[in-house]
Image (cartoon, rainbow, N blue to C red; front, side, top):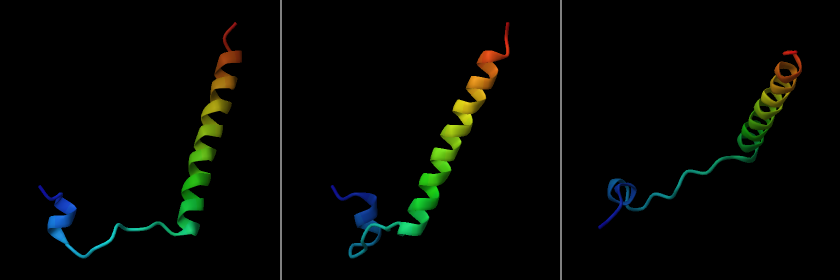
Amino acid sequence: MASTAEAAQPGATAPTVGSQRRNIIFVAVVLGMFLAALDQTIVATAPP
C-alpha cells in the first residue's frame, strides 16, 4: 500500500531545511532549554 505522500505526488521529494533555518531552529531550542534551566535554578533556591 502506498503512503499518502507517494499517492499525492509520485515524483516529489521530501522538503529540505536550509542551513540558515536549521541554525535558527537549533539556537531557539538551545535558548529555550537554557532559559528553562535558569528558571529552575532560580525557583529551586527561592524556597526556604
